[in-house]
Length: 431
Image (cartoon, rainbow, N blue to C red; front, side, top):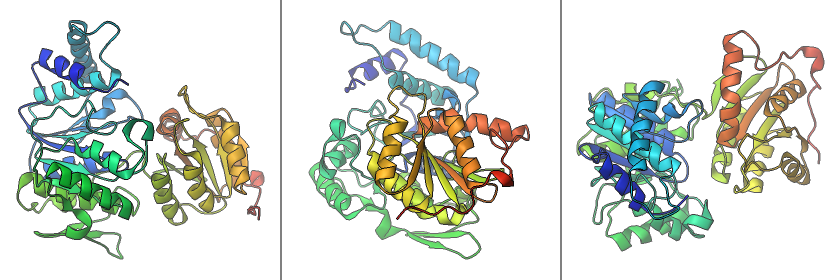
């Protein structure tokens, strides 16, 4: 990572500045960015507007990061755009030793695809921070969204909520009244108020402006300043998505400058979230979730009792820059055993270190280096009537998800079979 926008601006200029010429919604934040991006894009599509969405990371192929009208672009189209970006990058005059980064190249490819697809709108998820992120090259956005503020990437963004809020809000045009702020913790609210005041921004606070009312039949009613939106049985599971739904509705109304139309509820209900409380068919019950920081882990933990039976096992990996104790703690509150493993990423934390940390917290834990073996061991431990959650690093989800789904499609029960006689029975947590 090399912070700065000089390379990105030069690259886009060489490509004809494809990021220009359409309306934009820019999404920044610590958690909830991908979900909010997808919800915003769906709402715009529900208004009959051709829309591109730029997301990260991916769980299957790189082309999944670029969606047009709700669907990932074909791999061939993505590859062609990447090759055009590579050709443009090769022709740049940069300082010795400098080069276009991977994220810059993929971001430029997304802008090219949106331009060539004739998208009227683009919803852009920032990668890291905001001020120096490669996505901070948009013409005055129609709306900027701050989904959440957490003490994350502190070595790069700052060690306080205020420092991090300043980095994220730096993408907003000065004086804008179309900055939408999702539900935040008290410390983060104060930080955003101060940072917004410094930039002359007039934020819209989702928690104050949008009501979220779950209904017994599984539907949700969002009440904005312009009326009620009923979302019938949303495909995106988890009560933590309610905040993202509300944030997206507020953002799109701000961007359009008018109320949402009658298709809004249907558009939101159709949006699925791969890797976010995603249920995988089979026995025992299994879900995958990309909770990789403390707030994400807390949100996942609140959902587990409603989606997985006990006994309950967690298969977890984390990168070495994550707050391992802050992630593992909430997960262990809802799980009976931890299987610590490692993703293929070179910065994946040692499974031995993770398992030792879990045992120090009073929970049975095992280190299993191979992720597939960790899943098999967890499934055997809980037996056919239990439940397994695969969580932590998104790289772990990427390593496992495609193989698990392929097994399901072939009729194989998630990497291996589990029979009743392998069940250890209902486990007892130490202490």
